[in-house]
Image (cartoon, rainbow, N blue to C red; front, top):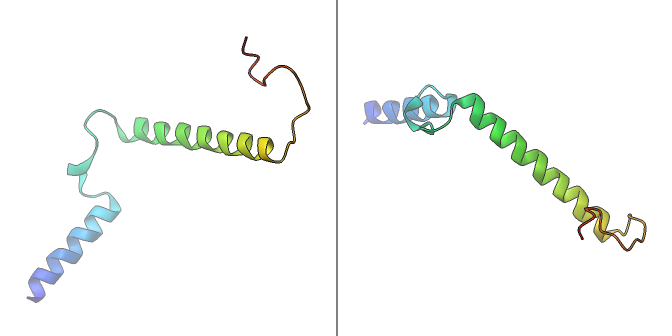
Length: 70
């Protein structure tokens, strides 16, 4: 029983530290995946700032949108 617990703990530690590479995404390297996540976080942050500006009416009144869509 102690051996089973030890194996389970070692498996969790190996998975948490990235030693177990069997669960990596097959299409992207770790650097590419990290870049995707960083781009997504940046985009989400910009959307949050845009939503806050819109809710607090921080933009000046205009007939054009901020994206100048026609």
